Length: 503
Image 1 (cartoon, rainbow, N blue to C red):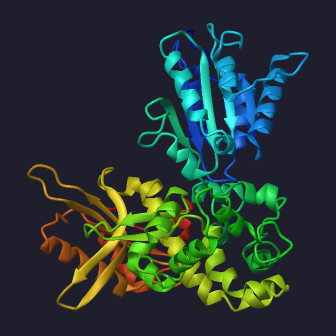
Image 2: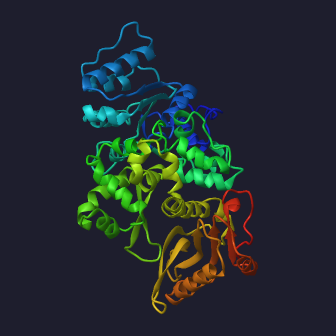
Image 3: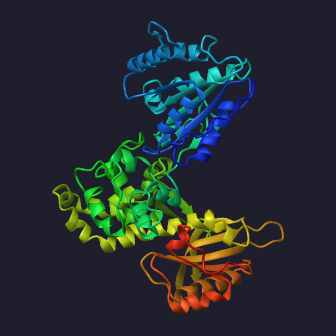
């Protein structure tokens, strides 16, 4: 099959360069066999927008499924395919078997020298009423792995548990896909650019703690209602997220209800509320909601599969882990909105928000700031380290002498191999609303000494203080020593360089 030039990403697509390159490489790969790709991502991420642009640039057939019966869904698919082919009469497939056989057959253009792109969007709607579809597609893919075909089939969906299951374990399509793409929220820097607030890091950080990097929230939900500055942020929260007349007001509830595997939404909201309240271990979550640890395994697994919770291993203690909410709007809802839901519905947004400053800082902005700091080290801050290797995470270092535990918010650890010991190359502490001082640095130094005593290599270990409000003069003086980084909001958002580089 002839290789064709990859189309340029349309200018209207913000960011998504990596995703665009992966999709166009998939479509234009010069293999004379059918290829399958799976595209997933939570709702509001812009998957449909991205795939429609791909079809426009590459040509092909796009079908967006809707919730309906099997007969209606098959009729809609038949009509869309007939329209695409310019048929004067609609097709009438008796079964999905007939439809898939026709789609892969020689009558449809693209079996020759040019790839034929087919996008089936919201595929979980079809699987729900026609569970045999993955097996039918598997049979067709297997056939045209032998026979020549230009088919490039992309299956897309927002139900993360369903889409993830398409390629899992003994699923029919396991081992058949050449592309598995998850469309994720914008990173915190890209989100700041998207909301046009990159020049105000203090505003960008607060905004991202509330709405994250979901692109639909700015334009489709809020019609470009963006805070005009940091001084407008409180009013913006009240007129958008906390207003019962805003589409964002009930969005957190809808995100949970839309997941196919979630039945008892009250239980899942309780689990998410437990995490928002700072109960991040399995035992802590179980205790908060009044269940045994073994009884919450299923909801935790479902929330992980739905990409609404992430389980993060303790980087220093094997077998220990904590849970983190991955959707800022849901965390904001559980921490700020849900406890005062009746008052918000009655229009008391200003009063509720005025009484939520401490809760917002401790339960929303603070934990979110720690996540942003780790994202910084994974991305732009990587160049500050002495190595590009290592796992980035957080953890706890026990201090038996002082009978305390030192929480490390940001750490980089290289696993040992052969004769080499595991090496710690960065230890960091993040404080959202605290001016950091020498005491924070001394705690990091103590943790470094403890890890060295446990046999880890700390000879190249730098220390980093991340703060949302700044650093004391004494800490700035200490940072001149060369192994300490001071990273504030300006540094996180690329408006300044850290005060020192690690050796």
